[in-house]
Amino acid sequence: MKHYVYLLLGWLACQPAQAQDSTIVANFKDTVAIKPDTSYWQRSFSGGVNFNQASFNNWTGGGVNSVALGAVVAARALYEKERWSWDNTADLQLGFVTQAGLTRKAADQILLNSVAGYKISPKWDMFGSGTFTSFFTSGYRYTGLAPGQTRFKVANFLAPGQLTIAWGLAYKPNDWFALRVSPFAPRFTFLADQSVRFREGADKIPVRDPNATVYGVEPGRSIRTEWLALQLQAALTRNLSENVSINAKYLLFANYKTLNAIDHRVDIILTAKVSRYISTTLGIIALFDKDFSSDWQLQQTLGIGLVYNVTTFRKK
Image 1 (spheres, rainbow, N blue to C red):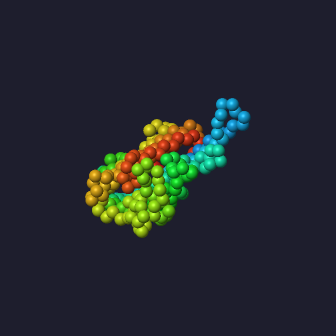
Image 2: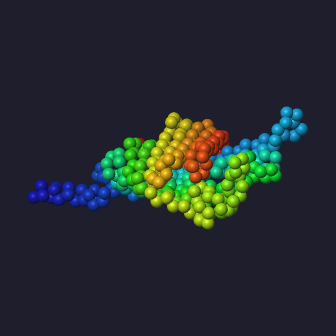
Image 3: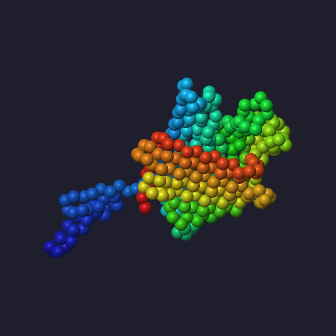
């Protein structure tokens, strides 16, 4: 009879440990409550502000008073649960420089990317993605203009703007590199500001022309659709050392109807951390798109300034 009583008491003592998965019995006197992880999101944010100023007064060596201010933001939100993932990134840049009372734009970029994936093997995903690019504000030319002109408007927010929707396969060998191939990737090019339409004469001087085709958008239209196209994306985000990190993206877009005019875009942001709140940032954007220009376009920025970083990404 005593054996049955001992067995019953032992079974009752074990019940609290079996009733809830979130409680672990350490011994007969103490218990440790463990809350299950119900959040599948990881987030990161990096923002920097660069400032440069110079002034001259009766300086025999000459010079021009100037003020430069720029901001760079890189943000990411990643959701992962079982085989599903949803990766969202935003890369933003905006900067201005004022010299001799004239303010010009020094940097401008909006690049948003959202990718939903389903893992079919340890290194391969099926995915669907959306990529959006545009500018924050108006852009002007300041050189190669007609006599009497000081600036010539060539771009604005959503003029152009591009949205690409893609489906395909992704190769992800690790947590810092991804290669995505999309045999079907329709792209929409927007032109919300018709005042940026212009043409170039034989002398390359821009002339305002409301009947000109710009950024591939025909006269009288505000959107161009390219349904049959292929897109290839490569993304690399990695710490090169304790204080140096790189965020690089490459995008190839090929319209099946015009394979002799393949678009290429490279975005690189290299950040070197000097101290907790001070960093050096090098940004490079290289773009080749015959609808924009027959030559490569290049934007390069270099700045030293304040930086703020925060992340909830788990170290692996």
